[in-house]
Length: 477
View 1 (cartoon, one colour):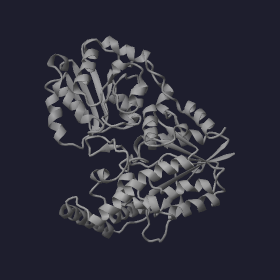
View 2 (tube, rainbow, N blue to C red):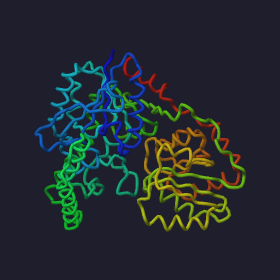
View 3 (cartoon, one colour):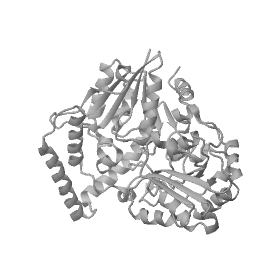
View 4 (cartoon, rainbow, N blue to C red):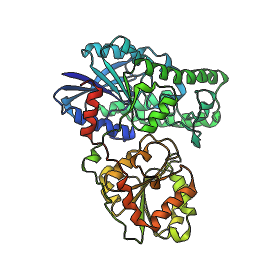
């Protein structure tokens, strides 16, 4: 029986929707792996559990939804915070830390070693952990490249919230992307209180007061600092940023047996940033949504109104503002034939007025303040076209897979991996190009019969069963 360790920075069964689509995938992956008789499955997370009452970094068992079918553990008091945003301001810890290497080494020894370690992320770890490959040469190290963290401490390669980053090395230019509201001690305090709550411990009301005071103190500090950092810290951070990308690329090339890119576009970007091409293979993630995937439109158009839907976040890089702008500029005769459904947590209050304005232009507007997977069938009822408009190189949007599986054809931007869900150029527009988007959408609104063409050029989604069979080969049998 082979022993496999799955790593992600956040527990796969956490309930706060941390980790996005990677957490969903990791849970599904473990659910299917534990069904195999030839695998013993372990899980490890790091950078979220802190106990200020105890000194040092250590690993402890944790509970999970699969019980003893998956043995789960978490690193407590990791020197490296997760997610990536929280460790941006102290990247030298990822570069220089040796504590995590020692702790994980001891974990490997105590558990009798692992045949496979499958990293879903590197957040929460330091480079030294990858170097354990030297001490455990018989363990197969595999890394699924779900995002661009090895090349970008901001994860997305999206620079200054305005454009895709083309920097060939980290450094001075990255500082502008650094979050200005992260305070390490405040994060650890909050994580410690969450840690105690998860363990069912009673929290004194005084700690709530301390939390409140720390938030106010940090807000005052940030307002006085006005985003400025000292010359000494700036120099140290620039050096750490350069070492961050260089170190990640070097260690991944040296110690990973295989790197699984979740889309062809992700693989291209990985190679462009220095990962060895022969180590990078495209492996589309499996999804339970694909088990009952539809290969034809669930709600064919009646020829009058074209019902479109956007799922996701009200964020610029996701293309939300772009979509609103495009619909505002769409010719009136086409706009009045478009019915819009938006399912996105309302985080941008300025958008409310603009969305209200669309009600006067479009045939209809329905807004859901966020969504859950359970509500997707209700939200997508009667939708005839999904809109996936990212401006950044979104690796492979989970929402695209979910809509596609439920029989919703997609109009997607050419940024990232979503365009790989269709072979037809009629359903792909140039990212950020309002005129091209309007042209594509208008053509479908005027001739909705063209929606059927999507399915003639749409490869089938990867089921979890098919994905597990593929992984079995990568795992070595």
